[in-house]
Image (cartoon, rainbow, N blue to C red; front, side, top):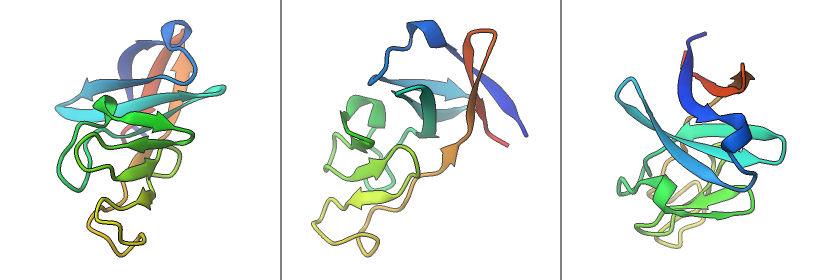
Length: 111
């Protein structure tokens, strides 16, 4: 396990919001869903859109570039930008990472 600090305070991270965090040169998306935080790759696998600039829709995030939609819980492609039924389209799933709160701060396991 390689737990990494995100710099995000849990108390200041409102439910139903998202944040982009940069850790060790990588861009990750944090999403506060209910009582937990989800962490996943922060860049769309289709055209490189920054997912923190996208829209949250339920448990999904929609890329601002070409509207690919990904599950924030599993990284699964929920809607392909070219209208092809996943997983046959151009977007590939995102990696997801475990999260925890330590001393009031969100951490991500990048191990």
